[in-house]
Length: 602
Image 1: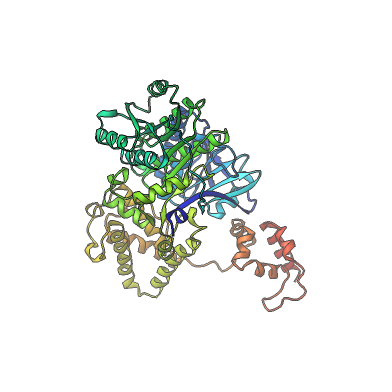
Image 2: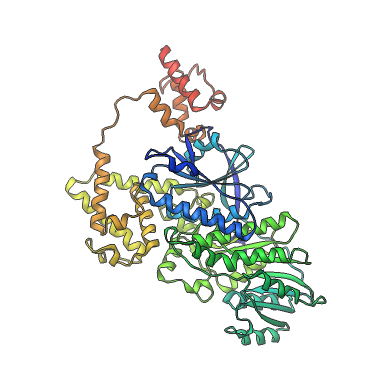
């Protein structure tokens, strides 16, 4: 199967039904006025704007809030709701808030590192009436339009044979930023050899004195192109404007390919405003400068190189995810204004060159476990040609091993649940199996089972084939954990056990043995707790308030509740007085009231 038919995706917003269930909230600004008892949700409203200064300020502010939220133990039982407006395009609408889009990328990375702690909502109106239902749906990000809740899902795009973006004449000039990089050289050759470009303006910090520039110029000239290297810091708007002024009128600039970028990976807790800015400069600032400075030029193509990290929210890449999410939004924003715009959200490239070559063994293992396979040069070039011919602002170009994800038995990103629908079932099954195993294990042997589980997860994260090499009493600090590995390990162990574990688990319980003893105490606490023998109306009401009626029906519980409302046992379906249609018109309160009224009449 051609790579162009299996590795091109886009993010789609699908409507879902949630119950109208208003819950207690407090705004982030008022958080300091509360004591230890927090409401179920704290709402952080984000500033909006499209200029580089506002984008940076917004992401700096949200980063600080995220770090405070995740570091404070008393916040652990509440959810942080980060609210934006106009930051996603639900039905082809304009993205009017690039700062909010960048915040979205940052938040998605934080969600990956700390599942269940944060929800991202983009809304055109108030969220109070729907918030309880949204939280019950366990969706990490939603968009609300006219009172309708939508969720993000990755869908496959079947590429056509449409011509690639840009029809370049022999006298046209095409600009590439980041030209000294691996991808800059690769695509410069491709644009000349396959797309007919004959005049290239190549920008990099060092220009013609950069590594490989002389050889690249000669190779491009042999392919029939005129080449000009320019030393330019693309984060400097004035310098970039000067370069554009220098383009000859008889060879107008008709194509922009923005490939500049840097990596500075780190877990959310370790990021700083300076580390955010280091990534934003060549990615976001430069793209926004190009967007503004070329607005009046006769461009046929405006293509920015982004990353799937923006859509997925890769752990350890909060700054990179934020920057690339902003680029994806810029492409949609340009299209809404009638300008050309495409953001190519690349997955993992092969390790031969580019930023992927900078990844260490730990990062490569992490990418492999994610189910994302590397793209070869030939595959990347084919995807480039296919994607730039699509009517899609921000296609995701990635080789995803969906079969491996289906069989992994662990949580799959919600974004992929339309392609791998077993996500929640598989995750809950793993913890249920462990609980069943512990229940059938003698008391004196349960700790050993948990030590085995912990050592197995450590071996997986650190790339060991045999868990026996992990000594139970050896400190995690000596096993090769970094901050991101610790987060990934905590999340994997939480999935395996079904327990909510502190972010500092490997520091609080510094060896497999110590952590297993902590887990044993947690499971012990669950066993010792006695189930309630009587359930009050309020306790049932509170429990069911968080469950959408559609989910009760899907779980096979709604019919049982309907029978309860009619005072029937499970064997008698006659004389049913409550119909499916009338049930669908009720909320949970109405259903429970009906149940209690009918049962009291009996």
